[in-house]
Image (cartoon, rainbow, N blue to C red):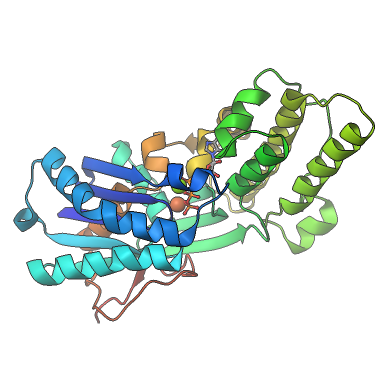
Length: 348
Ligand code: ATP
Ligand code: MG
Ligand code: FE
C-alpha cells in the first residue's frame, strides 16, 4: 500500500511516504534552531512550527515520491506519546487529509514507529527482537514479538531520557544545545576512564527491583558536583575527560541492560533506534559487546533513527498488510500513550 505518514510528536515535522516496505520519501523540517536558545524544546514553539511546516513538507514529500494525494491508499499519523500541542497539530492535519480524500486513517504509536523504521532498510526483519530506543524524550527497552500485535515494555527511564542527560551535561560543561553531538565531539580526545561516574540502577540490589529501568539523574548530579568541586578548588576541568567519562557511563548502562535483556529472553537480536544512536561510542560498544554475546545488532541509518514520518507510514503499511482495520476518527493526541498500544481507535 502507498501510505503517507505524519509525525509531529516533538520538534520534527516529518512527512514520509512508503509503498509497502519501500521508502519513497522522508521530508523533515525541524524547529530545533528555534529551541536552541532556550536549551530545550519549547512546546508552544514546536506546535506553531508544525503548523507552518506541515503543508510545505507534505508537498515536498509528494513531489519527491512522485505521487499525488489521490494515489494514496492510507494516511498515518502519530497519536502519541509526545508533546500534546505538537501531536494535536499532526492529528488534526491527518484527520482533515483522510476525511477530505476519503482514505483510511491509521493512528499509531510513535515508539513502535521507531521500531518500524528498521523495515525500510530493505533487510529481512526478524522477530522477536529486543529494541533499545534512546532519544531526547525516551529511553525505553522493548521486547518486540510482533511489530503489529505484541510489543512489551521491559523498562524505561525513571527520570531523564538519555538524550536529555547529554543535553544537561553539555550545559554544565558550557557546550551548546543540542548537547549530544557536542559531548561526542569533546569526548573524542578524552579519557573515558578518567573519572568513574555512577551507573544508575545497575547495582545488584537495584537490578532486582528495576531490572531494565534506567535513571540518569544521579549521574547528572555526580557530574555537576564533580565539576563544581574542581572549580571551587581552582583546579582545571578537562571538558574532554568529563565528556568521555560521562558518555562511557551512559553507554555502559544502556548496552549492559540491552544485552542482559537479550540473554534473559533468549533473543539474539537487538535493534537500536532514536537520535542518541548517533553517538559513536554507543554504536561501537553495542557492536563489540553484542558480537561477543552472539547478538546481531541492527542500526538503521540516522535519518530513520531520529523522528521522521517514514517510520509512521511504515508501521501503518504493516497494519494494512496484515489486514488490521483503520482507525475511526474517535482519537486525539495522547501524550502518554503506552507502547503496548500500537494503534489507537482501530475500528472493530
Ligand atoms: P523523541 O524523544 O520524541 O524521539 P527527540 O527529538 O527529543 O524526540 P531525537 O530527535 O530522536 O529525539 O534525538 C535528539 C536527542 O539525541 C538530543 O537529546 C540530542 O542531544 C541527542 N543526540 C544527538 N546526537 C547525539 C550524539 N552523537 N550523542 C549523544 N546524543 C546525541
Ligand atoms: Mg528531535
Ligand atoms: Fe522519537
